[in-house]
Image (tube, rainbow, N blue to C red):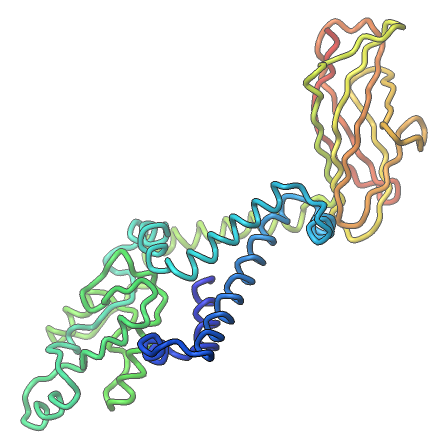
Length: 361
């Protein structure tokens, strides 16, 4: 995706590949410097936006954007965005082929999933060979001699993101993007030959055509049925998860130091960090309750609003909120006790829960 986007910027500013090669051979001019500056500036902007969007997944996005703009964000946010900006800019701008060949797992996965009947991007050598120039091919056909449709223009190689020559057969570097198909069809149209010299095919059909037999396609077979079933199952699970997802969440983290505090009246106190997640675009008010222990006393630091002995917490729209909770119980507990922290929306009754422990000794 980034390769195509960076290519689009390059074509918009500098022109197609032939024009860029011509400009690179010419001495630098003010216009050329301006083009290079504009291209790399847009590349950096795209890379920066990518890095920023990724970092926003790990914090409250509106708050982090405001903090980044005002210089109040934590240093790790700026460092992460800088690293992601640099990697995106360098990989998509200068190392496209190397990423596809050496880093991308797709060719390896594809090689493991395919079989002899799979339709891959294929050079139909039964049509293309022997290769020759367009002029020479016309002369041979005029003499009723054999000439392949491939005129050795190398357009399929020029447009390939990984720089492979599909005419050399199936290769691990092929990412099945189909750009060579489009380029070859364009050349075939201009030379008056049938399109499809490069297309989605397999070696079985090429050999059948060489023997004068019609091509056959087994689109429905055991492998494709299994793959379709797995994809359908995964899609159904994802759809179910989306339709039944909770719009309210809570996470609890017990303080590690100290694990508990013995108070002067003999009771025991544990401290927790509680994070609430409001996934709706409206302001919500929730209550916090602790289950699994008898008569706990709850106190949210900095919050005095309670309802029926339960703290009331206001959550902003599409935001998270973190509070410090103190849970105090009687002194006769002798062991760790499992707790359930339950959050309830006072308006809709929607609940969310998280489990932890109360440590007494």
